[in-house]
Each structure stands twice: as structure tokens, then as C-alpha cells.
Image (cartoon, rainbow, N blue to C red; front, side, top):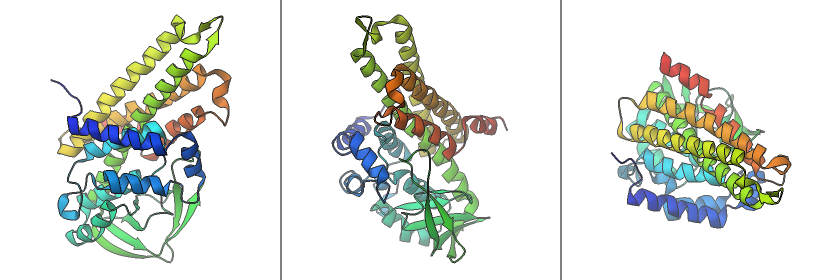
Length: 327
């Protein structure tokens, strides 16, 4: 049995990578993260209007592309590789929560807006919310209800990883409208969030490995490129093995979520656990094998390191996912 991307999915990945190569180099990523919005609006517009990333997993009857979450995961892996900050993660989770628990009226009203590129997010806890200060569509789970929130005050919350935007919500003066089943929305949002984090982590692992291999070919010590030393070859081979295992796990989880597989919960949590730990390990190896240069602000290794550890906190730490499987 061959488990690989289809021709269309491969082309999707190549298209996203080409866009990110042109519009999301290191300088652009840093500028976007430091901007008032926290992301590059021009890049987001390109991704939505020319590629349709926000519409991929939204059904055609709601003005979506009619693809699946798997195609969205392909995009997220590419975004993870580039480190480009975008509102896609928050919007995808909100859209999936609506599809799982929203009323038909809410789906018809909100999903076309998300598909067109409006930023959406969902608050599952009282803590910081992804893109909460940039979202024009704000959902929340209140007890057993999925609600739409209007009039909330959002304040940007500083985080270790500047490429992931968080905000704290003050809902004291807000109004809420019940639009669906909160339990179903929460369950889907948590699983999709974990699978999305795994996909982002896989892309990050690829970035860390490529940066490390490229540097090992250029850095000369004792008259030889350091990549020629057997001890470093072994460490980079281990990085590659963890990346490929993580990619297989991520694809399996995303496919199960996209097709409604009975084992989607277990596969997703297993993939998240493995991929998040792999990302943390590869980020550490990237820093170590770059030597002293990797701890400087000017080098991108610190961005890789921060993203790896931020992903491990967004939708559950690796050990929490493993514990959930054993319950």
C-alpha cells in the first residue's frame, strides 16, 4: 500500500511553497510578526484569493472549495516550514467547529465569510485566544452551547513565539447568541487543533533539518566541512528519521479526520504527541549543530526553537495527548 500525496495535493503544496518563497522570507516573517496585525495582510490575501486556503475544507454549498481537512493540513505543513504568521490556524479550527456543531443558519451565514478570508477564531477556554484581536468572527463554547460573541474587547497578549498571535478577551460587555452544540464543536475543534499543530510541527522539523544540513556543508572546521564528521552525520540522520515518522503520523491523523475514521481520535493524539516532541528535539539539534550562531537574534534558529515549544502548548502537551489515548 502506498501512502503519498495525490498529484493535486502535491501541486497544492508546490504552489504554497512557491508563494511563501517569494513573499515570506526571513525578513518578511520578522516584519509580519512585529506588525500591528501580527501577519502579512498581502500574503494572506494572496493565499486566500489565488489559492483559496481558507476555503479548502469548507463544503461547496457554503462557498468553499469542497476539499477536506487533509488538504488544509498540506498547506499547514508548508506554513510550518516557512514560519510565516497567518490566521489560517484559527480560521480553520473555527470553521471545523461550525461544521461540527453549528446550526444550519449559522453555517450559511458565517462559513462563506471564512471561506473568503475573514479571520475567525473560537475560544475554548478562558485563556488567550488565537488571533482574538484580529478576528471579525468570534465563536466560543459556553457550557453546552456554541455561541457567537459580539462586542468583546480583545487585548494582544505577548507570547514567546511572536509568529503565533494570541489575545485575551474581555467579554464583560459582550453579547452572545447561541448558534449550536457546544460539545460537538469543542470535540472537533480540539482534535483539529491537535492535528493542525502536528502538521505545523512536521513542516518545522523539515525547516530545522534543512537549515542544519545546509550549515553543516558550509561550516569548515579542522579543514573539513563539519557535515563530513560521522558523529554529526548520525545526528542529522536521526533528525531525518524523526521527520519522516512524524510526517507519516501527521498524514494518517489528518486523513482519518478528513474521512471520519473511527480511530481518528487515537491517531490524532498519537500524531500530535510524536510530532510535537520531534519538533522540540529537532529544534534543539538545530541550535546545537549551528554552534554559537544559533543563539543570536539575527539567526532564524531561535524562531524555530520558539515555534517548536509554542506548538507544544497550544492544544495540549505531548504527555497530555498520550494520557488521553490511555483513558
